[in-house]
Amino acid sequence: MLLRASSKEAAPDGGKENSGSSSTASSSQRLLLCHCNYHCPDDSTNNTCMTNGYCFTMVEDEGGVPILTAGCLGLMGFEFQCRVSRSNQLQLDFYVDGKIHHLALLISVTVCSIILAVIVVFCYFRYKRQVSRPRYTIGLEQNDTYIPSGESLKDLIEQSQSSGSGSGLPLLVQRTIAKQIQMVKQIGKGRYGEVWMGRWRAEKVAVKVFFTTEEASWFRETEIYQTGLMRHENILGFIAADIKGTGSWTQLYLITDYHESGSLYDYLKSTTLDTKAMLRLAYSSVSGLCHLHTEIFGTQGKPAIAHRDLKSKNILVKRNGTCCVADLGLAVKFISDTNEVDIPPNTRVGTKRYMPPEVLDETLNRTHFQSYILADMYSFGLILWEIARRCVSGGILEEYQLPYHDLVPSDPSYEDMREVVCIKRLRPSFPNRWTSDKCLHQMGKLMSECWAHNPACRLTALRVKKTLAKMSESQDIKL
Image (cartoon, rainbow, N blue to C red; front, side):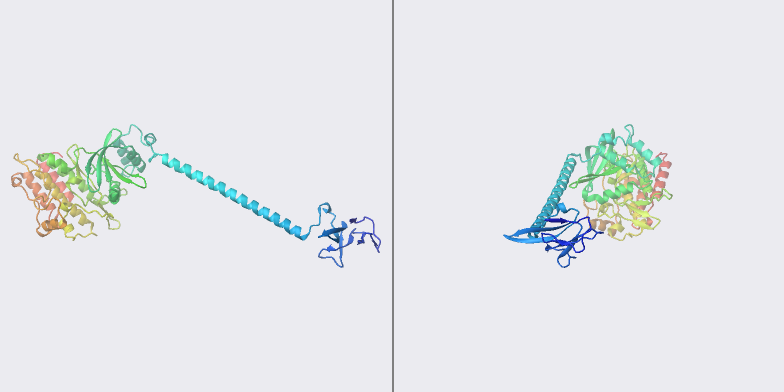
């Protein structure tokens, strides 16, 4: 039952309603004072409360026992106010809270499931795309956008020399060429890997494929070939380097000019020489070595480089009968600015048969770059001996043999070589016929000065080059 506040001024003494609720009203505030029972607010006094709305009374049934309750209702929203027991209120609160928690959990699980599903689908399609994709995504047609169809290797190299630093083709061009090469046939095999003859467009190239264990040699040789101003007619022409493979296999490619005559070793075994051919081979070989040994100063300079594995198998013969120096995987550079010898981190050593005495007896000064230069000259003296034996004089020549063929086994040990070269101080012998041939006699003197036991007594590459040029001139031979 409700009693509403009146707009009229209430009597000062008020009056009792038949419901038992009492009320008085102030004319200015129009408020009711209501009797309250079980519904008294915190600010009530003497079981009375004040409201601008209604006084109410009601009877509640608690377990069959009627309970009279009374109190105040505010004017605003009184239509929607109801009395709820404390037990019902707790149940309602628990139900609402539980429903919210269940809803939040459902939303979280749904969102996480959707995100997980999206990730799984994305990974699956990415994996399928990688599996179905070719190992090398740059195809021939795409590569051709970098290299015009009419360009030859010679054109590309000349352009790089005229516009660049002289250190070789740009890396993108190198990789493009490497991916376009067709392997034709294997032409050689060594401890580092294999050599193949390949084709790039219509041109023949040599492809040196390194074993994965020889990565240091591949890296060093690539680095040396791409040194500024390295290109020289008597140093093997470098074209490109590339790494091909996946996580399970790797191939290290070094692509160079192809010379069908093969190595000097192969050439001498099958070819006889006249004086002109002998001098041409010797002069061109030492010219390449001289360029390697020489430091070129300037903004685009070149450091001095020592070969460290010079032998007839590492010199190639070109079609015109000249030579070029190859296989630079063990080369060392001299950094003149810091006076430092740049030695490659390579476990490989040179060829025992061609090692100078100071390497065999381990007295070589590794901190002094000139030591490596003079070690090269010892090895070059042995190469001159190999060449001279194949030169015909008086209708006579010797069959091809490796240096020390008559003194050590076919695969000599360090101890074998040290015994002959360091302790006995023996060198390859000269055929008797050389004494009666002026040119061969001079060659014998030249090689003897190259393989002197004392490194300081050996000739430099430049001195050998000048001597060979003078010998050719005296015999009216144009090199």
